[in-house]
Length: 238
Image 1 (tube, helix red, strand yellow):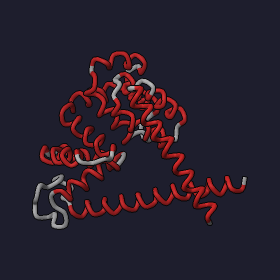
Image 2: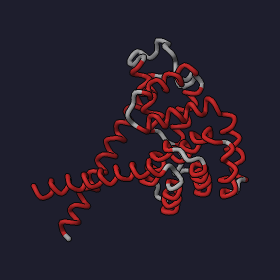
Image 3: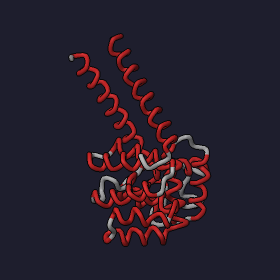
């Protein structure tokens, strides 16, 4: 029992340390961007004000920030990106070589807003009057164009919107099965504080391509087992 408690404490401590360092890195990048960029004008192509980062380095930072930010900060950075076709294109180009799903999803969301912004605004404007279960049946006509908006809502505003709104977007995701939705849903399940939303997201995953879901769950199980083994080894060696 004592060993079990020590193991749980070690795992929790490692998680907290990881979150702490990620938070520190994020704040440093945010402060750096604030100093380097002309906020009123958006992202300058090469105005001379940005003397510390140029080209690929700046694109990489933009991609990191838009992938990690949430809420108001995310909304502000999204608006800056969408104000420039050049920087949206650069963001998409930067994401293509990445092996991180967050970067691909973030770039797809921005590209979705560039291509289907009016559709997304219409959906968001009408969402207040939508019956979730009924909309799940009708959203099929919109098909995959709606998915980037759904990913955005659960990844960036999942802790701010009312639960019924997030449930509506989870319905949309399940109505348009696409294996790209697996990672956003898995992230949401791991990060939401709501047990109801966690169950709804898990239910949405069951509508996605079965083979892809099984592969992802197997990877999760293997990673979990490896984490437990590593911590146990360290525990008994100490």
